[in-house]
Length: 190
Image 1 (cartoon, rainbow, N blue to C red):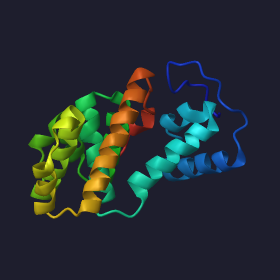
Image 2 (tube, one colour; image 1 turned 45 degrees about the vertical axis):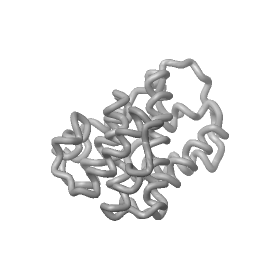
Image 3 (spheres, one colour; image 1 turned 90 degrees about the horizontal axis):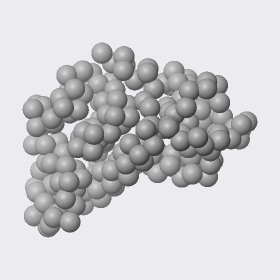
Image 4 (spheres, rainbow, N blue to C red; image 1 turned 120 degrees about the vertical axis):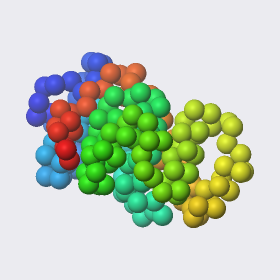
């Protein structure tokens, strides 16, 4: 690893040198972002776990979907706000600011998404993500039907549920391991 800052509070030995495919992936991160996100560095103790994490993340957040990339990042922020996950609030708050071009939207979603000027579709999506985060066992058919009523397909509902579930998992891992966000996120898109 290029820098010695530990991405988590755990003392896990990082694979060094990284496999060529992993180094190439990290080089792309540096090219696109200017740094390697600490969440990726945190997984470098086990390349198979890193690959599983990045495969799932890239599929959920970057592949074709009826949800825009911004909407998926909005879900990440709202879930992370409920879970009080510092790492994800910083990282995905920066992504919302960048993708929306609206620094206030990122801040509003971090603090309380209900104060943001959202359309009915986005509000329903975030309400569903919030309910799934707080009380997933209370989701019933009327909750899914409401999403359909504002224009989401069943495939979109699947994507909302999976993005929400992924960030509930990653929030808990980040919080439990004291994962530190990269300093660079704080200044992005402000």
